Image (cartoon, rainbow, N blue to C red; front, side, top):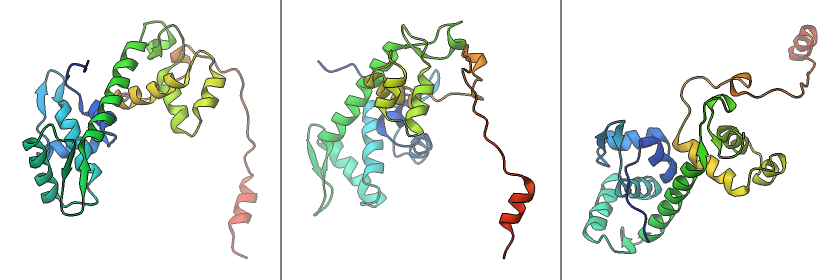
Length: 209
C-alpha cells in the first residue's frame, strides 16, 4: 500500500532529492517547481520532488529548455516508466520515483524513532530509548567514520539507525550555534593535548633558503 502524500519543507525536499537546500529555493524562485506557502513557509509535493531530482539529475546533459519539455512530456504521460528526452537520452522516471519513495519512507521511519525530550541530553534529538544524539552520529558519518565503526562505538546504535540519522539530520538542519557537550548533558572522558611548535621553529621553517 502506497504511503499518503505529504507536504515537504525545502530542507526535507533537499534531503529526499539529494540536492542542496539552496538549489531547492533556486528552483522555486525560477519557477521550475511551484511551491505553495504553508504555515511554516514554502511547501513542496511529491511531484515537486520528482521535478527537482530530474532537473538537477540531467542538468549537465540537457539544456533548461529541453528539461522543461521533458517535464511537459511527463505531465502528459504520468504513468510512463520511461520518457524520451531526445533522440539519444531516455529518462528512467520509474527509477527516480522509487528512489524518492525509499528516501521518503526512511525519513518517516526516522521521525518515528527519533525524539527530543527535555532534560535528556540537553533536549537534543536522540534515538528513542537511548541517550545517543542523532546529529552527533550523522556528523561522525559525514566526517568519514564508517557505519561499522560507529556501531562498534555505540552498541545501542544499528547500521540502519546510522542511515536514519543522516537523512533526518539533512531534513532537519540545526539552527543557531552548536551546543556544547555540557549543554547536551555529556561529559568529556579524556583529553589529549597536542604540543604546539615554537614560534621560532615555525618562522625558521617558513624562511627561504
